[in-house]
Image (cartoon, rainbow, N blue to C red):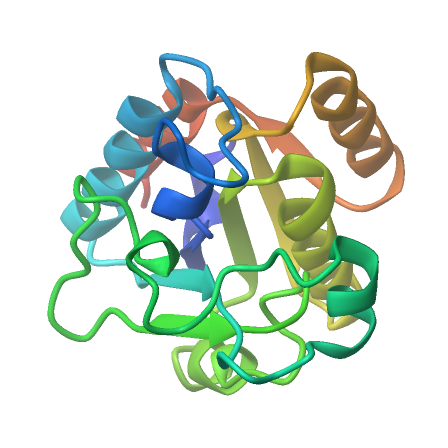
Length: 193
């Protein structure tokens, strides 16, 4: 990956919550073993390069029926205040790194994330997290439509199945996002001009 492509980038860590990643949780994904280390490596690289990092959490108010999302998922969504809606213990946002609470698949839909990115003159979003085929993919597509260059880090994302993972990455690569590995991005961040 060309280090110049990341000169005005931000890392978006999508929904790395106990709800998806803790054994026994309602939507546990059985993530690949390297998911969390790869995400942590990206966070460290972006912090080390002085580039912005933002986290998202998908969580609804307890009494919110959640509209179409609630109908689709039968009300089985993470709720604000539930311990499972919190980020996994390994991820602790640093001072100034926002945790954007969202109620839609896209991290840019009805949140303050885009304004936060524009204020920092970001033009490239490096996206990692879960689920690849839902929130990661929708965020990448939405970012593309908002004139950001999405870069999806395939081995720092996870879906409910290998089929969903590969289909999502293939669709994104065809017309929306660059697909990279954590090693490629981390190496590029270290060589950034």
